[in-house]
Image (cartoon, rainbow, N blue to C red; front, side, top):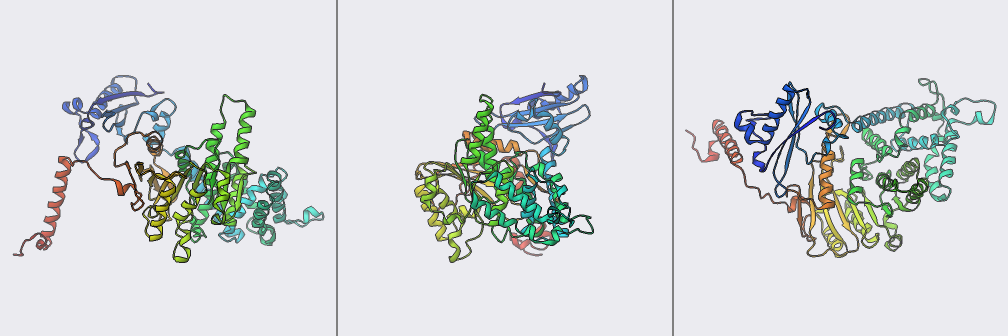
Length: 593
């Protein structure tokens, strides 16, 4: 028993006895005596159907299992009621079916309802779309100003001395009443930033400069006839009720980053022109887990964008700090150390820098070490003195368009980051897969230089739809800094294209219900050397001239089955017949009669 569900398992030692399906119907199992006796899924279904018909149990999970540790293991659940059954996708283990998870599995996978996270994402994107339209319709704001005004209002709303009721857009007798709504919001932003970050004056000035336009544009503070209030008050009320609570909950999701991405996707924006590709939150979390970040390690993101990687790292480190064996004061002290001393970010785009700073402040990280600077202008010696233990990055893409910009290639970013990290530091970067090929002579030379100083631990090929609408096929490359790549070292190359995320119309990428299981398999292989079929993971020695991709090292060594051969022959004969029938028999040596 697991919760309210009965579990039935039928196990066979060999994979070939996993299941016997009706021809061309992969969801209909044959239930004749031989199939039931010889095959795992057929036998499990047989017993489950008897249980649902002759006992009080009306919801049963039947599992057909086959294989051994030495071979590939296959586990497939079948949900069975007294009226029907549903064959589910295979799983790696039974973790989704313990008492804590089985109800969620039933609701999301069997019934097809949305997971809480999917529903939350859909709501976030819906709100983003509405706010985007309102900013355009009522504020006449440019695409670059939209995310900045959102982050500015969020900061103002976090100021305990400010409320939306103070925004009146009326001209009264007192000095306070004569202040425009824009001035009130700007002053609230300024006060809040100084309260939480009174030590980084230069950063404060850079951030405040981005918010100046809020008080300088009179139309934002003037009563709008369609709203009955100023656009700023309308935006502030909307953001307070629809967005603020979703961001200030220490969730690992880079919610403000999601909004920024949505603004760009609706209008084109400046993201692609600047080579900015905002990393989805399930990828930032995955990369943090692949690096196995510890709560005492200093983290650097040299292209921090909206701060997504730093937020994911902070979330993981906070969970480690919340050790129940420690006193509350010790936990809070550990979190304060993480906020103040262990999270470092660099961002060259001043607008993006303001958004990142806002995002970190909203997470309770008022004194984060963010700087607005060109990463390549930070000398390696200066970076090395910081002894960063973790490097994590999504660099700008496609900046090296000619000889004059060749120094801006993704490989240059990787090399500069690795050179600047501490000895033995771990580094993960997400880049286009073409980066791992080394298309130009310069790229090939950089790959050789990287291996001469650093170790390539492996490359993970991701879902081509990871950056939805951008058109980039990404990979995650992981390195160890300042340890020369050993000649006999076996790097891991993993095919993670099938990550459980699919495109949902009008929403974008959504978990189809299998991501967590597939993510677990990836982490088991990467962190714990779990075995995997070569179609998923290949271990290989590497050269700088290789293409550092799973597809380069993978060789399909599986012997085709009889059915594979029969299907191929049938396809060939069908094609040949079709060509002959259409007067193209000459392709096969036939002369026309």
